[in-house]
Length: 142
Image: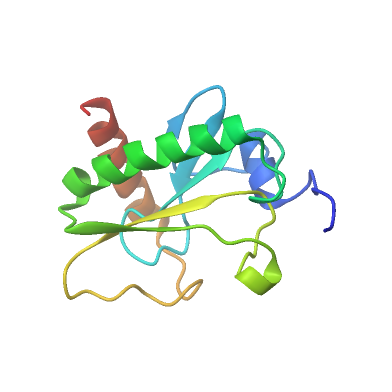
C-alpha cells in the first residue's frame, strides 16, 4: 500500500492551509461539509492524525471518528428534517477512495429523494455556509 501523503487536500484543510465549512472540531477529529454534496448537509468526518484509510488508522482514532460521525448523523436528522442517514467510507482506489486521508461520509436522506451522483455538482458557497450553520447549531443543542 502506498504511504500517507501529508500534502493531500484533507491534510491541508486540517492544518488550516485550505478553507472548509466546518461543523465540528475537537483535538482528534474534524468534520466539514463536502463541497460536492450528494444531499444537503453531506458531511465528512476525519481523524486529525495522518491515516491513509481504514488499513492504517489507529483503533482509538477510528473509534473517535465513529463517535463523531454518530453525533453528526443525529444532529443532521433534526437540522435537515432527514428521514435517515447514509454513512459511507471507502478504502483505496479499487474501493472507491478518491482522497487518501481516512474520512467518513455522513449524508442526511429523505424518503424518496435519491442522492446526487458522486462529485457531480459543486454547491454554492452561500448554501454550504447556511447548511454548516444549521448543522453546527443542531450539534450544540444535541
